[in-house]
Length: 589
Image (cartoon, rainbow, N blue to C red; front, side, top):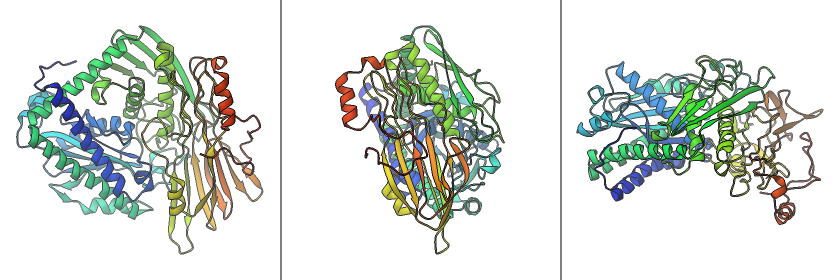
């Protein structure tokens, strides 16, 4: 840990921290309000941040976007720094765009825009560079104060299936177009050829156009706000504040680790399958505490698989960042969080693949990564432990053509129960713990697509039992209103339920079914399905897992059990048949 004699008083530091976070928050809000795609506009599947000019490390993240993006974006900015250096260095007015999942990305749907912010004074840039552990001040580009970055999940980027979550992909080329880091703007001039290439490879070019321009506008706003802040306080003061905020995060993280008992604990969990071969895949963690340092060893995890649940090394590190921030929530959110942490991730394992291994379903694997971190922490410090959440985004896509010939693609993800914890029951029907995103409202989905929700309700008996009960999952039943549609599902937790901690019980598994002319069908791969065909009036039904329980079920007070029954959270008579689409509606949300 590098120490500096701060020139920033505590009050100014607090003000600058707030102002810097506000810049990222305003960038988030700008994109959410201008994006054409409901996954960004309603679900907030996007993020913005400020990154170090030399190392690419996270300096500041917004509070409204996806934390997993912020962690991965550090690798993305490093990729741009390297690419720019190989092409004459960063230039005023440049903005880079790419979605390469193996070079600072996640999967092909997530497009990243990275922009250097230049200042006329080089002293502050050299000050930041001198505190980098990877580059000396002499090697730094003195004019770049920091980088701004924007990432958003685009609605469709080509590939074999509309919406891009292809559960049958065996290489990345079946998942969408792959764009390496290229200049979208050169010296401030838009490269229309790049936009034309992107648009030509999307089934929904208008949506792509709106999302792209929303991200550009967010960067424009962030750059203006940052210049205003630097003009007001001075480059050196702001640079010093960024250095101190990182130091404080690292020091606080070391203190939190030091409070844990020394030693090694192990945890593991499983993915149902990879969508190609119906065999489980193990995600395993050996977590070692060595005084004020953590070693996170994933060597026992499965090797790379044929299907699209692989993830890149950068995604693994970002998922661990998110998990640790859940555990140590008072530590400031910047690169200092990871300074006391060592990672061991074998090459070409499930958690560190390279091109062209498919990675489209990365969300399912990072959720399991977070689960094994939670399970390991529960063995070290139960008071900080949280049981496993529902553990799948259940990416569901339906697509077809309207009567006028216009193509429609409905892609969305769905919620479930969160794990119980030492202070109470888990959250009912929340979004995945990889993000602060929201679940698109049914009113928005019904207005945008030819579907009708027959049911959107809590799922009784889906949360794990315990002293504190896991949150409930949900039941979604969606009817097609057009003449014909195709669809797919990319989910998880169909075989391995979310686990409880500290003797808490497991939650219910995921279940999916859909109506056909000859009755009710279920996926052969349990949680993954391609080639689903629906006719008008037919429906799909998704029953999502709850969260795991916390503590011995015998310790749950009787009055709480009576309340659960009165609210319909627990119902011994509730149907457990995943193929029963018709029937008594569950408790309304």
